[in-house]
Length: 301
Image 1: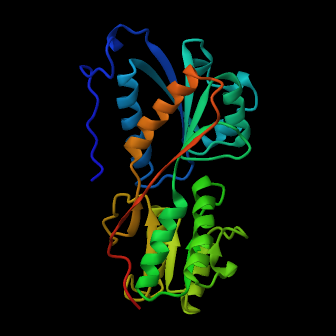
Image 2 (image 1 turned 90 degrees about the horizontal axis):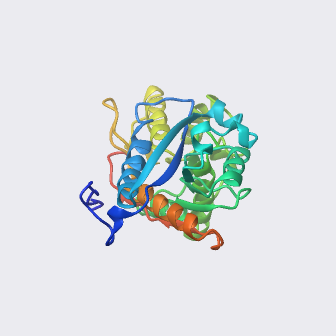
Image 3 (image 1 turned 60 degrees about the horizontal axis):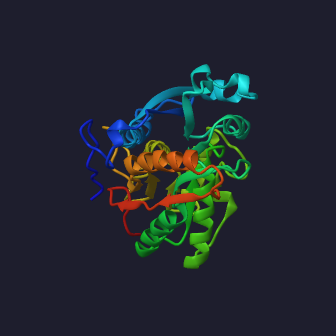
């Protein structure tokens, strides 16, 4: 059911761990500019798993919260936070989206593992989510409810998960024999900003009665906008999301995909420790499966 037994200060992962030299690990947590009621939920769950795994390795963590503006200014090793440049820090876990240049600069200085984003321009180990399988499950679910026209909505195509889930969406439509219309892949081919929600309404009026949103927060935005324009969810339109976040008080729960964020955080530390100990090991990726959570935002046509 997704529960994990937390590590404690009394737990020992292997014989003699208590006598090992303390390992110093850094964490760069990318902080997005746009704040929502759920902004802190995913990072906190990841840090929970990170902390448990670090404790089992007798490691000390130093966490740096880096805004989008600060991350964009990391263009040389001098720009890396001073605390992470210290020799006591043996490796760094990168959590959340960071610019390619910033990630490559940090990776040039310390062993690194990325968590939650995969950048093809930077070769490093990665802990991620199996977005392709997750989107396919959502498409199959919507098809089973009778939907044949399914749109895709993301608010920020710069986010790695927006692009990977879009790729999974196109593949899933092809596998299920459903039509793909680029007009209703919102903010992918042409950034529309706030006009993207108006495009969703246009799509609904054209018969696109189901929408897969790249993030729960964006899904709740669509629900509110549709309701403001006279549509009911799920009676008129079905809406899906990702991450299974806290449900706002004014909304119904979304049909969503839940990820084991605590396990992903712990796996990031395990992979980082292995990279520190085996620096010549081949670069690898580990993808975690998501679990579809039934909500009150989808119904049959």
